[in-house]
Image (cartoon, rainbow, N blue to C red):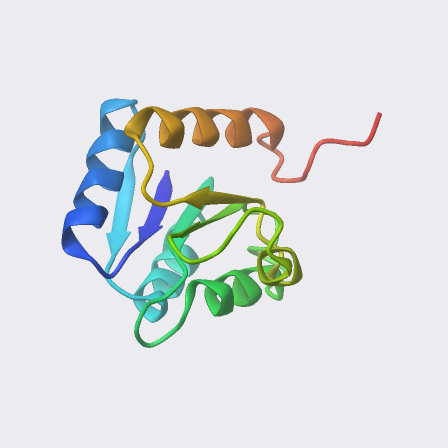
Length: 129
């Protein structure tokens, strides 16, 4: 299951629909606070969050997930139209990946597939080899 946090309805729809078409179950939230509640309730396999949202930013959502021992293993993708690759804010918040907007559904599905493959079902990053 994937939790999607996006305050723009049209982008939330594209994210949700693209992931569902790829076979994923999705819980969508319209702001960061609702997304954190959904993450705590469902403990998803992955979280995709917009950066700029009301009530709680995607960066704050990522920090909240990383600071919770029950949730910190969950990969978090920051989706942003304002951040650039290598932005230190994403790294500092503990993001697993950055998805730049605008994106095409194929990019989203490939990124999600790669992250879910990289993070074993045990919920920990793969061991360094």
